[in-house]
View 1 (cartoon, helix red, strand yellow):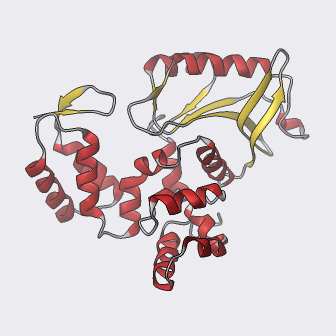
View 2 (spheres, rainbow, N blue to C red):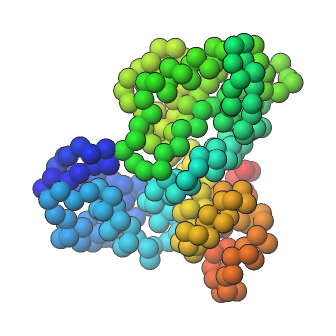
Length: 279
């Protein structure tokens, strides 16, 4: 049976890939077997991978919050749209968890042009600026052109600083995307010294692994909120589940019943850093 991937290419359906994604999310053996078996029953020639995902996800809804969140994480990142700003805020939270101070939406004058910088991050021993390439659907990759203009921006900003400290000179640039990079983009970035961070690139310390390590899940993974409620919170700069615990009064505007409010806070606690982690 052939299925259609997000980028439009066609490949043979491989149940082992579905098993790996479910296992990575934390689902257990018998549960995985049951989901794969049911997917195989409904799968048909030409079916889209997104439809397979939706079917598997619907059967996970009764599982514990962390399993559902891990399996639904990639789609949750797509739902941070439609603008790219929530994704920039999300990345800022992620780098802050690593000890950086961050600034979002900077405008800096380079040697030859004015530049809008998505994200700047700095700490005692390192600083960088980042291009955040947000995509609202799978199959869209950041290509060679993105890598080339990002490097040109780095060259034009070399004399600028993102803070007053000596470490804050702009010497490093990252391109961060919630999807993938083309092979040509990765090759060029490696050649000129621009770092690329994507959903599954590099193999270690990619975006997925960073989110898992620091337990910073976007609010779009929460099952206790509707799409419009999530958008309402994003507009108030509530981006990760931890934000809900730190600013619970913002939930009052959503019209939730006391029971649903309590359930939502419980779900958010399950998907936030443990205070014992020191984050």
